[in-house]
Length: 113
Length: 118
Image 1: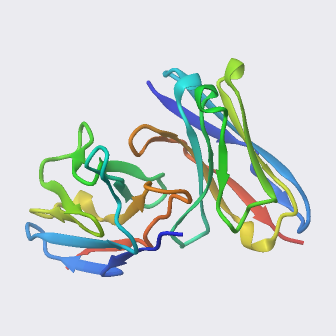
Image 2: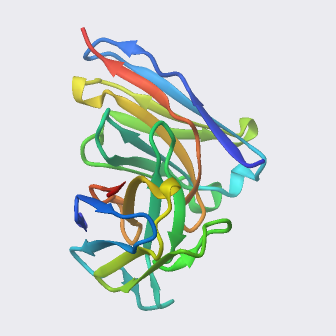
């Protein structure tokens, strides 16, 4: 199985500052035939189901604020919030869907400093 | 509005069985793969399994932790997917979510709670 590891486990950032979450896969998620990385990012707020933020590693879902960006390829990926807002407090997960089982990272808890 | 709603969660004894349902609305269910994901209290997300579409032979796949005990099916005429949970263990206690696959899991239900305890 592909192991997906996020870092850090938790992160405290001041309002208006940048937050970056990393995601590392135990094998490449880049499918050569279509040049797509099979990685998604989710945001989960307390008491709510997860919300899809990005697919194909960097394609933003409709309605996701532009302060959120995602990048990376192969085995290393990142999610960045350029200017942290109070409503961004949540747990963030990456998930690989390159091969079954579609494993999630352990999650990164983002808080306000 | 595109949505899925889970139901069927309950308190069940170890070794027991339960069947969860996932009813979809607002989109063409028959062309959508459905995934199940669970989350134990205070823990992270764990992928449970998925079922593909008729075009893809209703192929299923499962996490190692549930393989041989859990089974996913679907009834496209009812816009419903099912998760049959057998030989339940205390470690299966979690909120169970179903979600639609669309280049990532883009429509999630509110979840249904399964508690396995004597």
